[in-house]
Structure formats: structure tokens, C-alpha cells
Image (tube, rainbow, N blue to C red; front, side, top):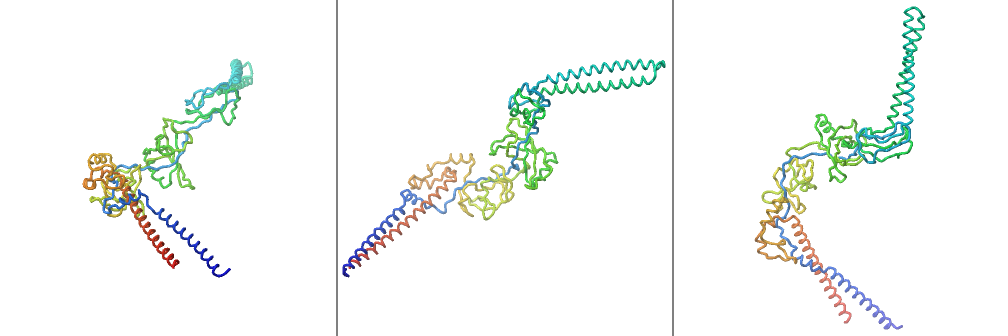
Length: 481
């Protein structure tokens, strides 16, 4: 092949490669522009994105109050019956009748079951007959003793006979005493054939059915009775709280204890603290306490897990704020306090116990000062705020004064509606608007910033495309020359 032909083939291959690279570059630029093109909604949002940095930030503020706060200790406890009895037979025999239903609430002494009493009644009759015979022998021996004593006075018989007769009388007296014990034991066996409830409580599941032979040594027994009214709960507290509890028990003050369900929403019963254990568990550093509950509603069952809340102290006249106002950060524990000029200041506080949604403030806030409970993430020291209240009375008052705008003064498209009128008439409805209005304005501002960034990226991409086009055009012109 000649050199000119080889050069022509090389130029054709090079042109094909250049065309392919140009097409690929164009597709990449086109795809990038489509990806960077903002949506119509975002463009509209960009018109309203820029907010006034000097405008007051809407927040929700509540005043600090003075109230009596209950200080509680919380723990997990186990319901423990005061008495649990396994009913067993004390004699052997056939179980004739079962006189209870499973789950019944029985009284003490109530008849539960009967065992065949006939063998024990026969033994009782035999013992009574033996005692009657021995009593007759004793009576005859006493009569003979009286005769021998009379003859001894007449010096008709030897004294040895009288002594022998006296010993025989005492022997018969011992025999009669033994017979009486046998009779009492036989009567007791007959009584044991009727099984009664030893305590009052709730019956469990039946262990033996009628017709079976029961024995005194059976491990399972007939049924288990659990006392439910009253009932106890055993729970633990940290050993650091033990001195305060012991002081309350020493003074005889009644310590209220409440039992709640697993989710701590439903109050099961209220009771009082009975006593504390005599030693601390060295492995956990806790001590066991025992509280008693009347359990009138039968809401507590044996071995049930419950949440315990024990009242240990009442703080009188404590300064409280909503728990949502307390913030934690690098500065420590602080709150935002709204001053009279509607600016906020960051104030470090020392907190105490919490009851419900209220937290005790030991120092840092005075009663009556307003603290921010919603909107704190947009605040800084000295920021201008537009405080509103969640008090229903204040909210209804603010809503009744509103006359100006509807729907927040903005159309769906993002343009301001009736600009001068809505800006001039600051209604009470705007003042009572919830704190999420600030969130909406912040979101609009973020959308505007994003739209502006997208526009800048699109301009940059367009400039790059033009520059690439100029370069490609120049390269083509050079090739043509």
C-alpha cells in the first residue's frame, strides 16, 4: 500500500473517533442541563424564598409559675400476695365431692371438698366403745377400793390388798385417759375428711378431680388459694435514697405509693409503704421495699410486673417551667427568656425534679418570666421574636381580633396577596399563629436559596457549553483550512 492511501485511511479513522467524541460530549452536556433545570414549583418558590432577616421570629412562650411539685421515685415492682396456700388433704381416702369452681373467690372456712369419711367414722365408734368399757372397769375398781378400805378399818383384811386395789384404780384411770385421746383423734380424722378454705382469697386451677384417691403426702394438693385483698408489691430503690425513706418510716408519715401498668398510662391502684428490707443487695446497690395495696378492683395479680411511683417529697412554692423550654448544649442547661422588648436572652439554669410536663428551676429564672418552649432552634442571643402563647384563652382572644388576611396572606403560587393591606394590618390572628409559621417561612427561604443555586449552576453549565462550542467550532475551522 502506498503512503498516500495509508494516510487517507488514518484520516478517516481519526474523523470517526472525533465525531463519536463530539456526540458523546453533547449528550453529556444535554443530560447535565436537564438534571440541573429547576422545577416550575421551585422557580416559584425562589420568588418567595428570600425572607426579611430583620423580621421577628415567631416563637411560643410561656411564663414561669410557682406551684407545689411532688417529687417521686420510680421503680419496677412485682406483685406478691400476703398469703398463698396450697390446699392439701390431711387424711387418705377417696375424693367424693369437689365443691368449688376454678377462679372463685372464697371466704375463710368455706367448704371446698369432701373425702370419704366412713373409715374414720368406724374408727371413732371403735374408740368410743373401748373408752366405755374402760370407764366401766374403772367404776368397778373404785367400788372395790371403797369396800377394801372399810374392811381395813375393821382390821379384817391386810393393807396390801387395799394398796393393790388403789393401784388398779389408777391404772384404769390412765386407760380411760388414753381412750379419750383416741376418741378425740378419731373425731379429728372425721373432721379432716371435710376440707375447708384456710384463708380467704381467689382459687386457682383444680389439681385433682372427684373420684381420685388423695393422700396427705401429695405434693400438688387440691388447689391453690391466693389472697388478693389486700396485696403487696415488692420493688427496689437505689441505696442513696434509703436515708430519706427510713426517715419517713421513722416519723410514721404515710408514704403514698401508686402502681401503674407497663406503659405507665393506667393507674392500677394506690397504696402505702409498709417497710424496707434489713439489708442492701451488694451486687446492684439497691434495697427492697414493700408496699400494700387494697386492690378493691382486683387489678393486681400475683407475680405481675408493675411500675411503681412513690411520693417522697412535696416541694412547696417551687418555680416551674414547661419541660420543653429546658435546652442542653455546649453551654450546659439553659433556657431562652423573652424580655420586655421582645428579644431573647440565653439564661443558664439549674434544674430540679420533674413532674409531668413541668420542671423545677432551682436558679436562673424567676416566676413570671416568659421562656420559649417552641422555636428555640432558630434563636440566638438578642434575637427579635414574636411571642405567642398556647393558653386557650389567649389563643381565642387573638383569633377574635383578626380582621386582615386569610390563609397567611400568601397565594398558592407564592406571590404576596394585597401587599400593602396585609403588611399594614397586623392582625391578632397573625400574632396567635402557631410556631410552625416560622418553619414554613424558613422552608420557603431554603427553597429560594436552592433555586438560586440551581440557576447559578445552570448558567455555569450554559457558559461551559458555549465555551465548548467555540472550541469545537475553532477546531473545525482549523481542520477545514
